[in-house]
Image (tube, rainbow, N blue to C red; front, side, top):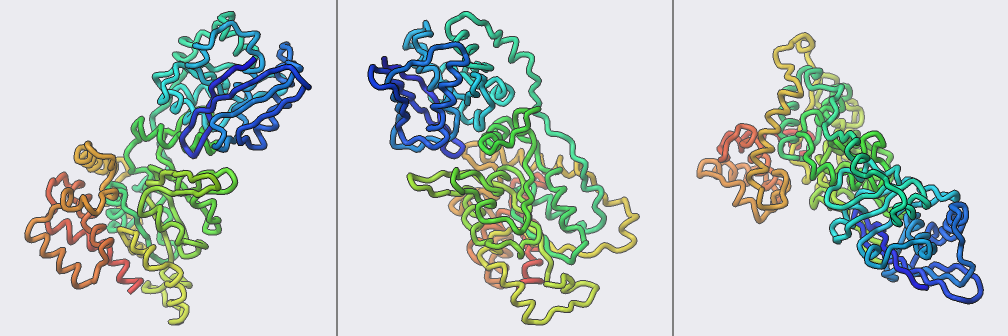
Length: 508
């Protein structure tokens, strides 16, 4: 007896269909799984056998061969338990082959036949939908996460016996009532932090507003205790709310990482990741045995905060993802591509003692200063758009409430600027000004005669690199958006360049 059951496996954040071919023939009793299966899948033999017996079905004592097709792609995880067991008990099922051709099964089995929660169910359901399948069987515990996908029938089952009973039409799961009673929470939670808590440093707050509006990478430089971390953590409070497309995009990443909140089932607010400076290369960009996503990927469409930037072990690994917005992780039989279009906010002290060019005398020698600055290479610095010096706050500013603008007020301006960008880029895959390609600069960042003359003087005097110059124009484009201006004028160019003064102050 040969039966074919459709399942799905993961490659990065995308799923691919696996045909589980189960062949039961006469011969010496054995159970073999072939088709480039991982150790977890090969161990499924014992789980599946116990689950079938404990679910009160007969396990075939014959020669069993399970082939996972396509055989040249590595399959990992335990989510193929359910389709393998369905193939083995096909003689208990009354449905024909047509039903199984349009159905996908995924799930890990316990020894008693119960289905356990699996990772990555969201990208799996989305992949099944894109491939044109009509329904997918998943573990009941993944119900909330999968409920955000429309256009495919999702059947959550608690155990193997319930699954077979539903297929045969003997059990009614009342799916309409089940899904209608789910409380889908797609509204972002309120944050405890607020920009109204930040005293002084109005120039820095304006710079962070521009960074949030255009997704511009920003480096905060200043003595310890001046509020660099405090302000960086509040950037997420002024970022626009996620739309449904972005929620699904981020949730796919968090689903395969096993970080989805069980009470919500989806990521409904922009990520904020803040890895420690002792983080390894793999934890930052991803990789390892299973090519799991790293911090820069988990910060996709959100914020990656790198505190104490110069203390990170290998910053050069961030060059390509900061520039391209994605990371390629090579494997033995191919590679996995993860998106990482995040807003990167970094913070650092200006010198080893931390008080260079501040009110407190610096104790560092010239050699220590040079060695300290050389920890961050020129190519990495060139990938930042804004360099914001963070100064100590005067005593009088602590009691001055005239300029303590709330995050809600700043967020409205950021959202208006984002709306302009959405209309501007509606015919492309660009989401923010920072994603404008060099070939599109002349189209989206047009300069009038006076603005072009000022930009030329800045370019010639400060010997800007091509990348730095295009970043200057992109920043000016965002400043114009914040003022609801369709055209870039000289004031926008001059303000954009003012946010590079921290670079010339500390690194030149």
